[in-house]
Length: 303
Ligand SMILES: [Zn+2]
Ligand SMILES: [Zn+2]
Image (tube, rainbow, N blue to C red; front, side, top):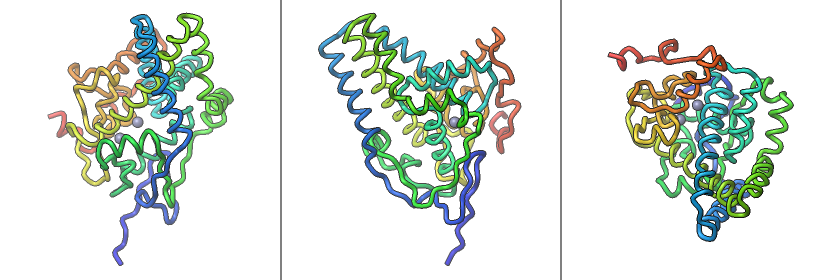
C-alpha cells in the first residue's frame, strides 16, 4: 500500500491520527437552509410588495457597514488573521457589524474559515472545500448543507476569543442580533424596510459571499502559484470593489496575514482603505502588509 502524504498543520488546525481532509459527506443543514430560504423569501416579498428607493438605499448602506467594516475588516482581517491591531471597543464594534451579516457568530466564522483553509492546503480535500462540483451543486451545498468530515482535525481557537464574554454572548445569540436592527428599521420605514434591510440584505450577502468564494477558488489569475495543495485561491479583479478587496483571494492565500488584499493601486481594495483610514486617526496599528511577510515565490512575482 502506498504511504499517504502526511497532512499539514495550520496555525489553528492540527490533524490527529487518522484525520482526513477528503473523507466525509455533505448533509442538509436545516437551520442554515431554512434561515437562508426565509431571508430570500422575505426579501422577495419586500421587493415585490414594497418597492422603494429609500428602502434600497438603507439596504445598501447596511450592506456596506456589515460586509465591508464588519465581515471583511472586523471578522476576517482583524479577528481571524490579526492583520492589524485596534482598540478593544473598535474590535467589538466591527465584529458586531460582521455578525449582522447573518452568516455566523464569531466562533462559527473561525470554524468555517479555519477548517476550509486547512483542507485547501492539504494535497487533496473534499469537494465541499474545493468548490469543484459545478456552480449549482456548489450553491446548494454552500447555502443549504454542511460538510461532515469522517475524521476531522483538531481546531484550536484562542482563549481570548472563546472565553471572551462578549464573543460568547454574540455566538449564542447571533441570529437574534437581527432583532434590534429590525425594530429600528420598522420604526424608520415600517414592514417594507424590515423586509429589505433584513431579508433581502442577508439573502444577497450570503449569496454574494458564496459566489465570491466559488469563483475565488475556480477561476481567475494565480500570480502566486502553489501547486502542492488541493486548491489555490484566485484573483478576480472585476469583483475587487464589490467584495471590498476579498476577491484578491490568490493574494490572500499567499499572504494570509496581510491587511492588504489588493496589492497595487489598480487592485481595488476598500477594506484596506478603511484600515488605512483607521490608522490615520490612530485607531489601527501593527498593520501587516505583503512587504513585511514571507512567501515562497514573492521575488518572482515582484520582478
Ligand atoms: Zn481560499
Ligand atoms: Zn482568510
